[in-house]
Length: 272
Image 1 (cartoon, rainbow, N blue to C red):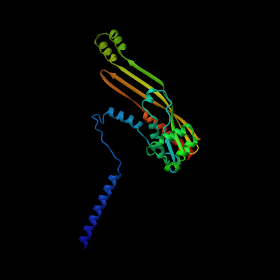
Image 2: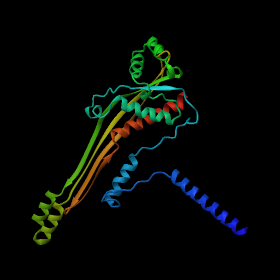
Image 3: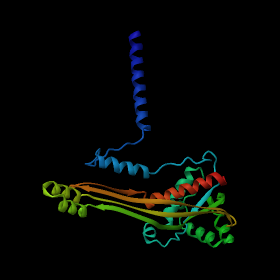
Image 4: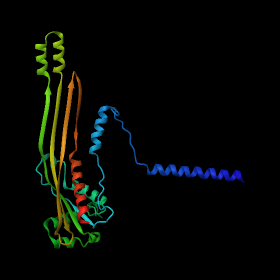
């Protein structure tokens, strides 16, 4: 009997271990390898450190535990004339970011993909401030529960400053070769002449506005504006054929997402 009990106990323990192992595998966060041939090198460490600082980070919204009013995000406007920005972004890209962040902040979001062609009618009604057209549209199905219409507009996107500095050792190397004399002077001139350094930094300023409109009246409930700086830089050094360089910064996609997060934090903290 004891042998049978021990066998049963052993089987039960094994089953529990298997379940625990499977459970931990299911809930474990995905991890991925790095197939780059430079993985683990100093250049890889620098590049990954820069990428980590620019990676997406979730925002802990102040009133996340409080459910907000039902809303729809309509495509806003991009009022900047900067070609680099307007070629990269469309209003729908910004609205996609906004839907993601508003959902994270516990706002019930009726996504545009579920509305089909109605999105155009809704956008037209609220951009024109036409309450009759808005009420007519909002009587359809899921739209009846909508309280707010939101839009996010880019008002500014411009490079406001740029700075550069560098050192070219060729002139100094020539002087050392001339006045140093002998092999020592020639060697010093060669070393000094090989030194090349350079640093450049550009700063952008990107500004975004949000508007909250009443879904029934089209009247503006609230609005807000934020702008953020985006810095892009590059540095390089070369001495005796040995070079070291790096470039990077926060990209336009990341800046737009950070602006949306900043504005959603404002909406979440003030208007729930």
